[in-house]
Amino acid sequence: MTERVLLINDDAFELATLAAAMRLHGVNIIGEASNYIVAENLFKTLHPDVVVIDVQFNSHGGVPFAHRLRKLTSEVGLVLTTACPDLRLLGLEEKEIPVGTQIVLKRSVGDLNVICDAIPDSLQAVKLKEKMIWMNDHSSLHENSFISILHHLTDIQIETLRLVATGMSNAEIGRTRFVSEKSVEQIVARIAQHLGLIPDRRHNLRVLIAGQYFKWIGAPRH
Image (cartoon, rainbow, N blue to C red):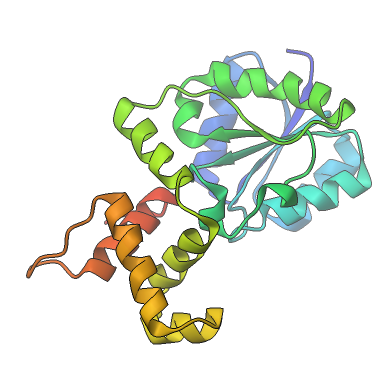
């Protein structure tokens, strides 16, 4: 692969592992960065063709930083990696993603062909000013089923899910979204129904919902 690639990820272990695997796969990795300063300096000095950057770089700062790099070099290819199958869970909308961006689920990175295909595709996509696209992956049937459920949640339900996960009460969510507490209660019930969550005496419904949220944004579980 001739494209010159810069990797950006603030998880040092993940960065080193991905870089090593991609080099073995024939990808021309010219630099690795784990923070803003190093990433921008390497970008300016090495002039990569494509940047592979984690969406949650520096606490969800991957997308704003990708925009910054595009201002420096308008034709640079962008590949975003994420553990989250629906970017709305991170508070991101499709219109916020730079044109031509290829998005790869981290589950897909296990099959390096997916991310390797995304690298040249990103260069073609930015030239044609195409919308962002999710690259194909080989998730299990269970994962694909859950992703399908997420995509059927409305924007309001996704936002409510995010606020529940932060620990906000129905009353607090209602004040934030300028709706009644009763409306929030109904939305939370619909979310639980969509996710197949059934509360019982041992498990609080809001805890179950929050658990699903953190699982699907890729947060570590102990």
